[in-house]
Image (cartoon, rainbow, N blue to C red; front, side, top):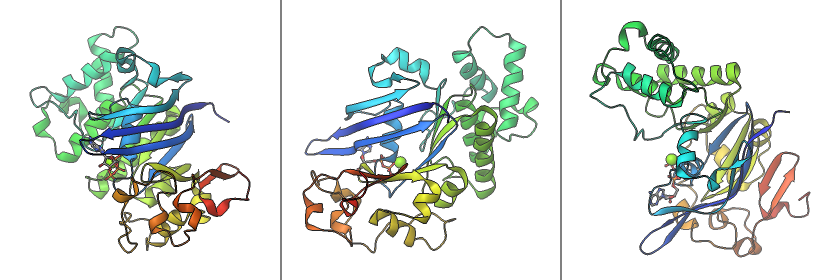
Length: 326
Ligand SMILES: Nc1ncnc2c1ncn2[C@@H]1O[C@H](COP(=O)(O)OP(=O)(O)OP(=O)(O)O)[C@@H](O)[C@H]1O
Ligand SMILES: [Mg+2]
């Protein structure tokens, strides 16, 4: 089996608001091997982006990582200086953001911006010709037609979907070890979505890139991912191989999620028919955060810390499985 590339251990990321503390990520653990694709799913507001931004060490104020470890190629990212972290972002870990806040600059050509990204992390000085060749190659890879001409164009000369693909090109320009893709296709039309997915598959196959894919689309998870983690209110409630989790779900939340989707190729709805919400669940300290909405809830779910129970690589955090292998 391939080496473990990323190991997240008991990660806690809290937002310190005026009146409350939002425990957006509260004890998340998982590992990812080289070449593996992990899907991260769960209702809106359950902490998926906060988990991704924690790995990049890009949590904005008033948020802070308060506990845990993030081992990437054996090094704890939480122990690195900001300067060391800058060397890793964009080079070893590429991120495709849900809201591309580092979007393209309107005053420079896309070719120029791509070449800057390439040079920033190039292992050695590159001559102009090879940089241009790489720029054209990347634009071609993300499906921009006639890249040998279009690299001279400015961002406003591209469509929204094309701009998003150029952004993706930037994040993969150096073939990172890990790509974190936070809903990379949500704003795009179906054809472009398919191109992005193909591009990610190609990176995985050609370069053994590992991917964390955050999405509401369970069909995409089934198509792309080896493993899937189901999050609820800042915690992973179930994680395992896609087949195991989709065909033999263990956690009541996962079961409800899967049952609420008529077809896996459409986006996941909010579980509005179950009373309560993710937001309120963050206040639960000791017990299971899904307890107020869980049809299988028992007394102890309210105030007893939930342990992990595992069946091979399939892990569930739920009192129902007490007595099974732990
Ligand atoms: N900058 C911030 N300041 C304060 N609270 C935040 C901030 N970012 C996230 N949160 C809170 O942290 C929790 C998790 O948010 P996060 O963005 O990680 O959710 P998500 O799972 O990515 O949701 P979505 O599917 O809607 O993108 C939410 O309660 C959210 O309100
Ligand atoms: Mg998000």
